[in-house]
Length: 327
Image 1: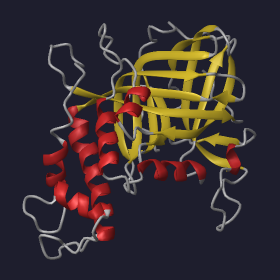
Image 2 (image 1 turned 60 degrees about the vertical axis):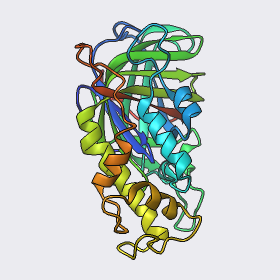
Image 3 (image 1 turned 90 degrees about the horizontal axis):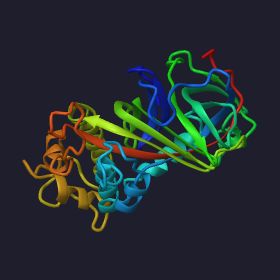
């Protein structure tokens, strides 16, 4: 997760997505303005969750457009979940888990609130983290890692990320709700390089908030069609190619391309290697298949035409120690 300050707020994580988010924006209709007398309560993300099927996409979605009787919005999550169902060996979630465990992704959060049970004017700040102590992994042979996620870890805020981002909200019976605002996610799909993915009309929900962290949470927003075309589709294509290469002969002999029977590569060949069928999968071939499912569901500019896709992901956190900037 590396951050880009679009407007003020920052969240790190992974879709592997491996993922970072930055953003900010309006004070939000959930909490008005942030109460300057609040106390800083600091945390680090202990997990990030991506939709793997339609049910999870619904569960991790939020109401982004505010339309009555419209339910939650997570159109891109639905597509990612469908890809995962078609090719389960594309272990996006496993890659995210690994990045969290070994400290490749460190997402720090600060809830500035007078109380973590009931409070208004709660500020939610998220930063990119570094300098984990203890080190996430004991040594090169440590396959579990997560030593920095026991609730007593200390960190520094990455100076390369924004430090003035915030989302205003409220806590009721231990549940925080905040937004809308603007958030910039940075994600990686599988082994891909992280990509910037700005979310507009972003919202956040954190459940069972306490001084030790929160058990479940989610953040969602809208992604413009331009960002889908320039960021998401090429990242999906890179992930598809990586998996195809593992069990097929790239540039081999059509139609079978040397794909091992019953493996994910064979499934991906049938889905994407179309025009031409040359045992190679191009960005355009992936776009030809995937773009039909990436139907915009959010109208950002209010002209009556949907021009963005909704996305929602999950996040949980444990207590951590770091020094928030003055805010």
